[in-house]
Image (cartoon, rainbow, N blue to C red; front, top):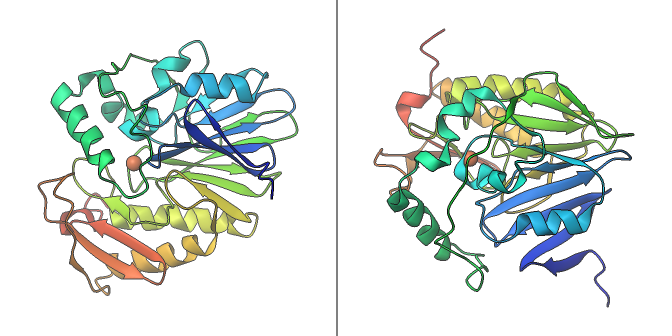
Length: 285
Ligand SMILES: [Fe+2]
């Protein structure tokens, strides 16, 4: 059988996963997406920044393209400095976590070493722990901004929760959502050190996504299984409400490689959220 949908470029597995939509799998760690319209393309997230992501994107499209970050975490903006000659967009509420040149070598090494032990990691041959990150500048994006790619649009939905500057991109024409870490098949992480909002605020973000749910068929998340179904929105909506109303059961969950806080996990069907009790209720309200 011939598999025309998947190929290896620059050591990355690149899969055609939808209409003019390529998932670029960065060694099992992060999923970036390239989507193409009639006049321009958009690269959604740039991964950890190892390897030659730029080379892949330039092979996949000959259209001008923009870069959009779903949020400011290192494993979503790591390759931004390869694209400084292209417009880069991110929500400014993640500005404080997006200056990766401020991370110490020790922090970066710790982050990369962790990846080597993750199930599904396949980048041992080309992983370069000595890569130096460069600076980038970005344009702010906010609720309701629309990118017109030509016959295809991407609308920005602000979804604070995992981070304060998280966004989901809605492709109306193809009925897709690109969800970053806001909707993934593994736990949603909400705690101190990630620039998170609260579980309560995350629930409000899911409320908003519910209004797009009937216009969406599938979701392309920033990690692991992809695509995933819209029932993840329903189940995370239920779970986040149970948590902030104090009705969810929880158990301890070891994330000591990421935080010194004591994290706990709550689950409802496919949905799971890892959080700390001080990040449940929105005290500002
Ligand atoms: Fe993240």
